[in-house]
Length: 317
Image (cartoon, rainbow, N blue to C red; front, top):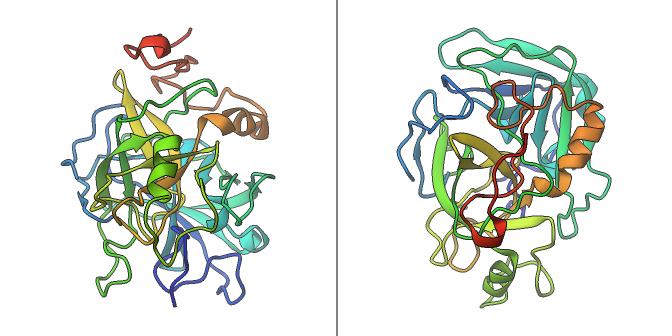
């Protein structure tokens, strides 16, 4: 069985909101080693079409698990908060679940869930609002191997063509016999603006195409290549799309949906973070815990990307 559009589940597994999900389960945060949250990643450029990420590359990467099974991804944004995709989070099951924090060389540490918040506008018809916040009962202690990703301000506009990175433990081939990777995968992909992406989706036809024209909505952005080849896939949903600015790494988007994986003219689709920055801050009740650039205790937030004409600017104090 295959599930169209969803990037959230491993191939053949039903979304957690559907009947038949096993309980109890748990969420796990699998964090590769990394010395700082806002440095250049040490992994090689290149999940579908990607490479193994080196230890220390992406310390905010979360693996949401049921038992020992990887379900989808997420991003650590603060001591008590994780961002993921709404379609991959089961609100009604969370009392039986917990977060666990681990890395390859250290013991497993569990964090019970206090609450799960899906964005109120979320709908699986079109996937607008496909973002969720998970609040942990016990705060995570940051150290050299566990760090949060920086959040952009609501005014940030990520420019088309900017090279960004997607990471996850999802399938490396759509509908194939390859087993899901045990090592975190990484791939570098350029951003594609909404109008261009809609034009690509309006070109040709695939059996899994969404209904109607212009499926890329205001709160979405695409990333990938016209020829395909490199993309997120099943099991990567909820994970991070991150972009570097002035040695700071920003969470630009959340892996949401796609038509199969790495198909020509069908780039991956992500929920943009800036439209939901105010919702995230309001839901948390305080911005003091949020990680803003440069993720070293400062409260600065990026307002515009420098060197891009009308978008030029610096981080505001």
